Length: 566
Image 1 (cartoon, rainbow, N blue to C red):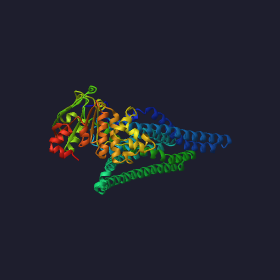
Image 2: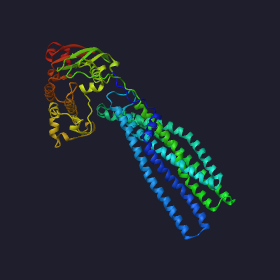
Image 3: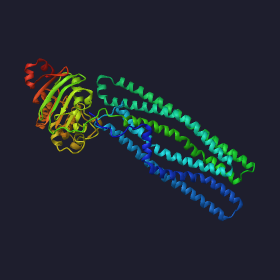
Image 4: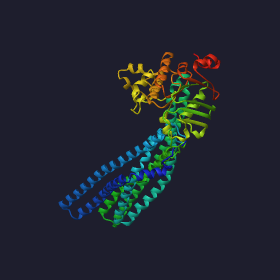
């Protein structure tokens, strides 16, 4: 069963090219404005040099006023071009980061999982930090070009004063970039390793939070905290390594830029003493030597940002280019159809075979929890049909011929540990806001007492993972959500293990009543649910070993009686 991957594989370089291509307009506008800003910054010391030059020749108030006006124009241009240029680039950067976050989230929410060896915490890190750092390329390129504009303008202006000054700037810039390009390679490698370790730490803490309650229950929390401390320490050490590399890079860049500025100033001073350039040209050269440090610093930092963006893009590609674990047909099951499992071998299942007719309520008593979990995984299409032997038919059609979306729309498999989300009772029961059976689902799941307990009723706030609900309340909330979906086929896995016997009895009757006429399968050891079913299938050693009503099985099957009687 496969879902076609409409997006071609995306290596990191391709992701960066995509980001650049769809932001061309914003980048062009940002480059023009930031180039104008850098040109204005460069023009300031040039203008000062010209003012000094002409003031010494013509000391009239008119010339002074004209000079002040020219400086005012330059300052205004610098201020406005910076403000609007950065606004354009940062908007494009933020928008692009949002696009990649949405793409990663969409991959995680697809009906068919992607074949990628990443945990949820790692995917979260990729969808946040890596998406942001990848989008930085949209801002980096225009700043790189604008810095180059400043360096070129400064080199040309100095070259017009004396060719040796212009050549010194050009040769010095090339030498600085060559040194820093080598150093940026180490930054890229260190950053990739840091991102991987941070992602592993995020995955570990996500697992820890998920299992915090059971860990406290058997005293394993200290060992779990120790395991997290180890991966977190590894991430910290790598972060320190990256900080050291970045510090060495920044220090080297600053030192080289200062050396170049000093060389330009000393050379200009020597030329002025030798009478080869004028005092105005000396003022211009010293001013440019001081100014050029800033664009050179920005220019020299660009390789570092490019390597970081590329490392993040490669991690994005781990998710976006991963193939789906299965392929699929495009068929749809017949409405109201039944469910059939024919010779399925997977995990602990050994040629499992049974059939549930349309509209029938069947309970499966699994003696071994592993067999129940394997069956649920197969029915929920968490295991690809080509990964196990046998056939699962839904509405008389093999699941392998159906699209995953159609299977999920026709059959809902509700796990015993269904997630509870931050929001309200209503949004947990009906996430899409389209169900017409929410009141009936609340009543059938015996969630009415929880709703009545709070002034806001169904709009009562629920914390993440249902932290402000008891175990039984969370389980009933999950059951209400499954019933509100009102699907043709409903599979429930241990839906009442955390509720008391009286409530369980009422839930069993309510579920049978609310699902009358629609196919329902309950995998459980609850006597109440087993008794409410039309018939019971006994799952033992991976196969169905007995079939009858609950009461008949109690009367004649000692093993069954021992397994389910309370």
